[in-house]
Amino acid sequence: MSHPSSSPTPAPAPSTSADLEVHWADPTRHALFELWLSEMAPRQGLLPETLRIASADASFRRYLRVDTVQGESRIVMDAPPDKENSAPFVKIAELIQAAGLRGPEVLNWHEAHGFMLLTDLGNATMMSAIEPERPQANHGLYMQAVDTLVQWQLASRPGVLPPYDEALLKRELSLFPDWYLAQHRGVQLEGKNREVFDQAFPLIMKRNLAAPSVYVHRDFMPRNLMMPHGTGPLSAQLGVLDFQDAVYGPITYDVASLMRDAFLSWDEDFVLDITIRYWEKARKAGLMDFEDWHSDFGAFYRAVEWMGLQRHLKVAGIFARLTLRDGKAKYLADAPRFLHYIRTACDRYRELGPLLKVLDQIEGTTPQVGFAYGRM
Picture 1 (cartoon, rainbow, N blue to C red):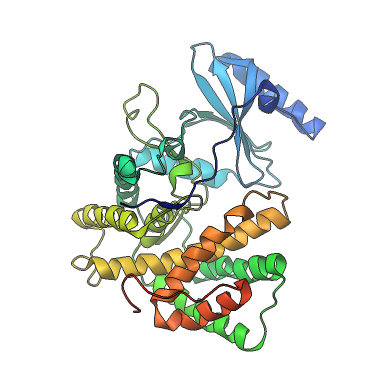
Picture 2 (picture 1 turned 30 degrees about the horizontal axis):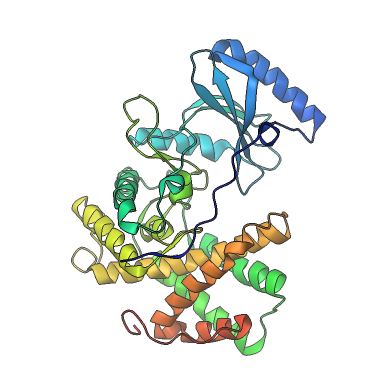
């Protein structure tokens, strides 16, 4: 039976009242917020005295929770407009709703100051419900995630979201040599090593750009999916969060994110099981009508691996940047997971052998021996 090859990031300890207290580094911004909230409270039935920290993410954005007179709660997004552009969040929230998915509804947005009032999807993520040591116990949860993903992809239309094009792929891949290698490992690519990366990156981009395009969440994983909550018509569905970076790009991306998680690793039999079931559902929905993908799961799975390789090179760079530039040390602690994903993918394909060799030299790791499918 499959089991996680490493444990997920531990759940945070129970919050104290001090942990939940809302602090403001900028008194002027605090005053603007208090004015906005006081004007909003009567119209939305808010109880300002209940305001507390809900969560923060890897950006400059944070989320607060406030109760209502009806006994419900709402989420407040605090996103300084000089650091965060919230317009994509508002647009994509509408797309999520239009797709029939359970996402936060924007109740009010003060665009100039970067404050937003949202419906609350609860505080239990899919990650919090996962049993790491019993993979099959999570099968139903992952199938719900697969259903959500297919429904999201079926709503796709070209020209609505920014394209996940070569320029964006190239910028993302550059994060690995610029931040993970140069800043974190202290390695400047030169000579033959530079040539290896210069040959591998265009190949990765070419493979991924060949895939058909759909709406891409870009961080579709258990930490950003919320457990069923509430009493509305969509209350039995998983909720979708952290979608503000969505683009129109390779259909392989989000399933790679789901099954090659940034914070949780499964053995390949479980990854294959869920990915095959996604492929079957997507095929029935008409999303696999590309080359031989409709009849050949192996061809699709190889494309997922190439997409996952791009994502993991990018995320390793992002996590190094979050640690070294932004002082968020917890992210780089997951770097070994990404290097494992990267090395496993490189080990599968002959044309990526030189990249694997350079990475092994840099990391001081032993070349991998034995392959699940042999080299391709």
